[in-house]
Image (cartoon, rainbow, N blue to C red):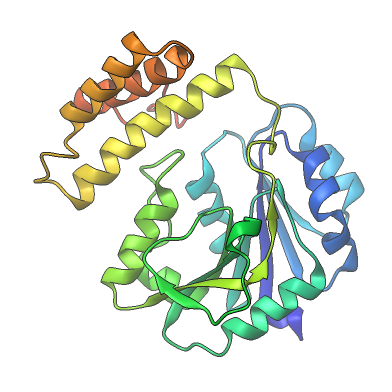
Length: 271
């Protein structure tokens, strides 16, 4: 029955090892349809995943298109009414996913549900309406998400779930934070880190934040792109420990101000 209702979607970028460690048991149970999107890892992650998990549908992309675009590729190929979008650095069980799905089916006007992913948030209480949830674990009502318009494909990374949640609320649907369901999120270990990857992430954080506020609060002085650039630049010049982080964020904000997009004409990520 679950295979007719729910598909698990995992976006992987050089994440084969951590994906097996965290979600291998769920995938091996073969209780749900599974789609893994490999975001052009280039380290033979796709081969490792294919050999280890022959029962999954593996979509190998030719370029790293970011989180939202990769999720959209999977969503467009679904045959189930629900999808659970999971980060590979998140661990859960087949039993807890089943409980989560059963809980979600009791709400007809909700488009997104999210579990607690921090122990401090895990409480025995009823789901609550919120305006935003983390993209690391999102249960989606696919019909409603398609109606809302999927993830914004102008964004490479960061604020894609914030933007989606904003449009869900504007459409009149609710978002439920389910504290009584817990998935453990080990943030930051989804892939191996490097100076280039860290720069790329921070550059896009700066760009995407400017894009989000320009889209949803175009007249805001507080969140205007120029002000954001100045804040990042000031932190870059004065920080004692995080100068490279703020330098990259300032560069992303400056690129946005100059009219540069998150993606290059060839489809690769800008940075």
